[in-house]
Image 1 (cartoon, rainbow, N blue to C red):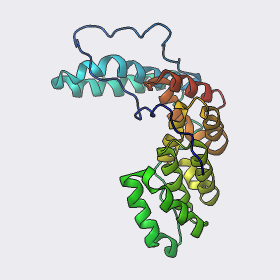
Image 2: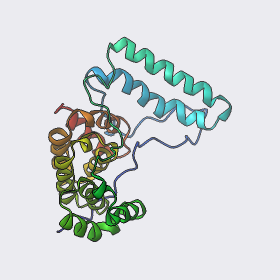
Image 3: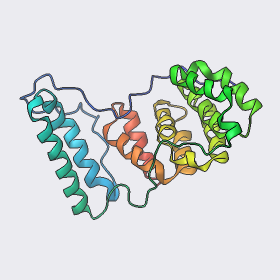
Image 4: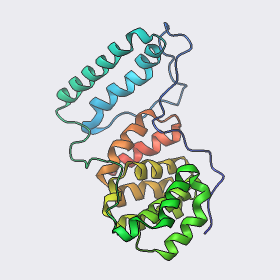
Length: 238
């Protein structure tokens, strides 16, 4: 299997800005041509408020610990009010995501090779590729093995191979469609100039509504401008 490495490393999840160097000053405007993508559709109220708070209020609050709790309360109040005014939430019509616990037969769940593969991926996903390739060759009915292999491939930026492994995991266990880690891992491929369209295809066709919430977050808050724009474009497919 060949990879497509050499791309810029994916941004950290969430993409929130760090503390402002001058807490009392208003936040600086973004550089010309780097305006965050607008929130879309019925999901705009909640995400717009969160994005504004993340860019302005929270950096200042982090430097004033004594009022951090008040700011947290303000966040909840404003988000709730925005949702009420918009008449819907960003989860309306979407399936909730979670960390999927595979419903595997006991003889599969207790495989020593699978347990050691979990530990290897937790330590160093990219370093576990060969181990997982052997495991999926020997146990091609084990969804979790393909799920772990997909994570290992993405850690090496082997986007296409990773999506193939994730696709097989979903075929074997549909619960992985709603797996938060899988969705966030696939979305890391938006940094790739060559693979980002295939990433959008995968999220729309293989994942569907469960991917919407993370795409909304990336379109608002990702540090990388290309990731913001590509996530926003992917949302048009929903």
